[in-house]
Length: 148
Length: 421
Image (cartoon, rainbow over all chains, first blue to last red; front, top):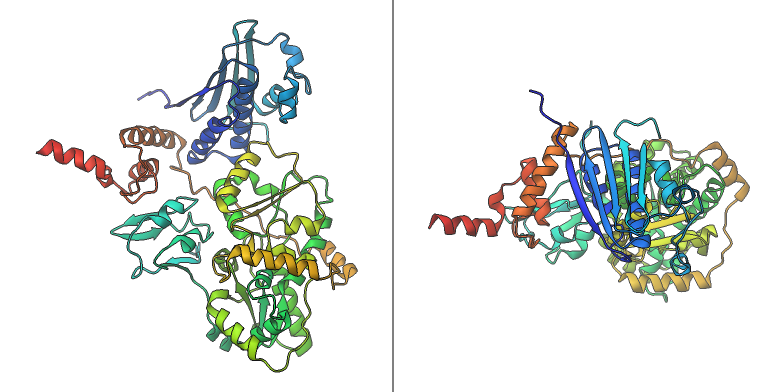
């Protein structure tokens, strides 16, 4: 029998500027990974990237979705938002670069570490962004990873 | 493997199967079956929330009584720093120590003194530059157990220095053995405890091989005797005590104060601790130096085995600290040498406990998660607790793990009766 691997699909709506609920999706994903018995170092990486992705949608976008797909081999995280899109992806990947407003920075966010952190913690990172339309960040974290 | 001991126990004759403890348990370790509460011991962190909320006093902590002193030739009482908040401020602390001694002890040692030693050691330890931030205090054994079960990725953040209780046990025993020329097994070291998790940590130590404590006696069981002795005692010795900084360890925030750390988080109450550890796990607190997380409201002063209201006790400790000197009565050089030898360091790995794991095989576990989701969606979502599980989701998990059936849900039961009519 060559049945396709089972996967868990999780979907969360992320609302623009909703700082109170931000982090809920990542906490939820974390709980499920613990029930799966995933190594705690991998859980930590998944938690960090989902949280950063969630925060990016809350801070920078007009709202969006976080999709998480878990199989026995890898965890796929897709953060999809409805704009405004990233002007210069290369710049956005630099540590410390941020387009967040002063108000957001005063709240302690917008340190320009979001995307760099996601890159650091994931095994695959793809960003697809169109100005005026929206951004999709796709990440993979392997269950057995060479990273620590 | 030896069976896991934990301190919180249920007196079935007193339990009437209400859902108070089950709803409050932070690790969902309690189920009600056949009108009695059951503790899933692997999940219990001995925080004592259930002891606090039980209206029938059915939940308690398995502690020793004074009869155990008979097993030893020489007995030491370790007086916890929380004791400083337990009695009226009019009562001199020396009288209380004397009152404790006359319970049958030969020597009394102040845990606050050991807290001074822990302070000196931790100050050195946190100078190491390779420690993962935020550093988490090792004082509260309920929090350590919680980290093992629920936050394994934070295990490396726990400071590798023994708790003051263990430091006190070791130093007091050694001192007595040297001074009175006694063998190790002739000396009994008893911790007067405010805390069920401390009792557990004596039998199942975290981070060390064996505890230096031989028994634990709940403060509430000897409170009346101490009070009577303290108010009637004729001759009072002058006992060696910890500094005000050491006493301050009894209240949340006291450790950071003693350590002189400014960039810290002091969090008390197990639900609040869980929220802060969640944030830490998301990497949001990497810029914080030290987290002092205490399961009990107020810190150790709020331990479930104490007598006094935690807020009153905390206020007393605050006043005691103001009156007393910050000067530690320790030989700092000697302590630093012992620290360098690693005497106060944790020796064993703190292991993750994969208790939440649904299946050894990840593919099976994935299927179980799907199944849990399906069942949860079919339940009413009221989290009423009538089925004997704390939430609908917890019931779904129990069903998938084979511990319960869907018929446990009273709403589902009604539905099926209606159909059969």
